[in-house]
Image (cartoon, rainbow, N blue to C red):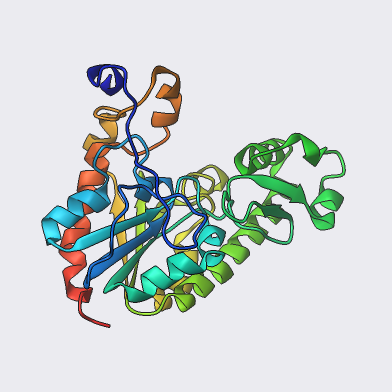
Length: 278
């Protein structure tokens, strides 16, 4: 595995911060140039376990500085609560916003940590009333909590899912509105949004986001770029990833270097038309 090839050394992400932000980004730290593209997103944009994520590859292809503002496990709230990131995006020639899941935002049913959006803080009275048989103090992460609720039956869980989806549309619309300048949405997954039919597909990453929801927010961006990893890229699994032995299972949940290369090529074709459009 890649970890062994590097002599037992895990991948160095050179974590860094910008300005007053408390978010931890992938480094090395950069000084934004006069013209640059800002990339806001979660684990996929950050490039967990990937030595050269699509942001780095795209910078070489376009010969334009690409600033990786992805944060592992981030959701929409991470960026809406961070003025520094929004200020950086305001200075960019173009901002690419990864489509993130609906489970990592605070809503009427539960709240998440303002920066580490995968952390479950607590259930509201509404959720506790729907699930009187659940002790929510046992959960620390949203995915664990939602998986448990789904296992108790779809009728009640559908109520939760619809709330998350409504909150996602409102929060995505707000984020796009707060980012000045030209914006492009990026769907980067192992499937297309049109495939999100039925509860099992809807809960795949990005959690809860459907084609209908994308249609509701697309007016806030100049374009939505859909990157669906090819079967060939998916077949390579975690090949080329850099990880420790105990991280094997985590790598299998993420897109590998081959998929990142496909995303870079797709963006290379679509982004140049938006540069200089401020």
